[in-house]
Amino acid sequence: MNLLEARTLSKAYGPVQALDDVSVTFERGQIHAVLGENGAGKSTLMGVLSGFVTPDSGEVLTDGKPLRLGDPSACLAAGIEIVHQHFMLVPEFTVAENLALHTRPQLLSVFDPAQRVAKACEWAKQLGWPLDLEAKVRSLPVGARQRLEVLKALITECDFLILDEPTAVLSPQEVEDLFSALRILRDGGKGIILIAHKLREILAVAERATVMRRGKKVAETSIADTNEEQLVEWMVGEAVAPSMVGEWTTNEESVLKVSNLQVAGDRGENSVNGLSFEVRRGEILGFGGVDGNGQLELAEAVVGIRKARGGEVSRPATDEIAYVPQDRRHAGLALSMSIEENFMVAGQFRRELWSLGLIRWGKAREWINGLVQRFEIKVGSLRLPVSSLSGGNQQKIVVSRSLNSNTRLLVACNPTRGLDVKASMNVWQSILQAAEGGAAVVLITADLDELAALSHRKFFLNRGRLAATIEESVV
Image (tube, rainbow, N blue to C red; front, side):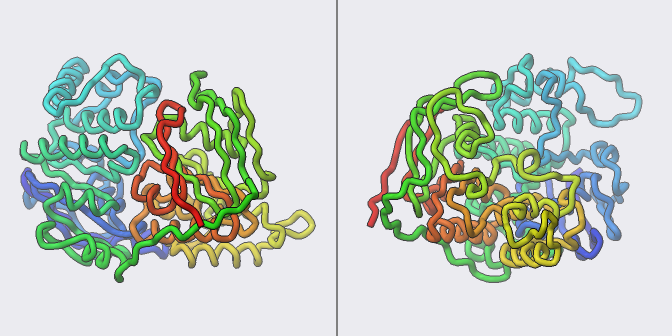
């Protein structure tokens, strides 16, 4: 197969038009990026191409032949693979067992797990990736899990590989390693379809880009003929000015004080080792470094949901602390509950929304609608399950509900992960406003641009210890 074509695809979820007459062609031997704001329809389009979503109208063709829609097996058989944003791995199985489970449907084919594992080893060698076949998936860092997902796809000898937000959870070095692998695959004749928000990465690795907005294709261009500013304008319909951290005036009041903190990880190992710091009113203290060096355990200990093994944490009262967790799907949202119910997780601390122990739903929906408008969260109805929203819109809910007027301490873990450029700027401004309003902010992020743009002081962690600090001058 040399060409993969989407023709006049449309798909609606209730009142939300996720795809609106979208046509686009992908070619082998090319890295083609699909860009757009959260909720623009990118993931829905990829869902149709991979067979996980059935469109309301339109067709998909491979080399001019119609593909059976809504059938993942048919897409696999046609040579189309997808690496999902949320990995499809069995944590308790080994790497080899996860590889053996994945297969391309073929008539009269014999199940041969050893052959699949051998193919994966060949691909890993070609791409320069280490591969421990006996390791349990639950023990792997996120970068290794993603490489495993890519290897699963490659053992089927696919022609087209779709990657949904592959860099969202990777360190800068892991991103470069991934892009090197994608270039090898492209040069070997595979078609790479890349969904992403980080425009600098797209400009560095892709040859072609399709831009979507509100379910429509608004532009398609060669990367050589465009730039970051033009792509942003196509994505959001207007130019977006960069946000900058404001001056920080020193204040003697310490909102958070951490002394010799020691925290155990999930397997009992020391994840935080003897950290001491304080955050004052109006200050944004940023923690950088590669994920997995104690950031998650530090955040959970600071807000009080993980018990410290040693040391002391002096923090405000629970109803004065706002927390944006690292994993929105498992720690930030109840996916089976409605959008408005998920907002009310934070609404329980707003006294004006309650009367005699009961929710004042009129007031509550007024508050929720205000956040929906301010953060441009794309929802059809507040009573729909939150799982019906795109990942970016789910993240906006977690962030927006956390920014309460009475917040004295905000702990935010990768708050813009998975967000488009305009939404990221909105979140940045909200964090800055929280600090300007007097909140102390602990920002934990793997995004160095975010760390530089928002933080007054920057700490870098390595294996739970403070490895480096950058102290900004203050007024």
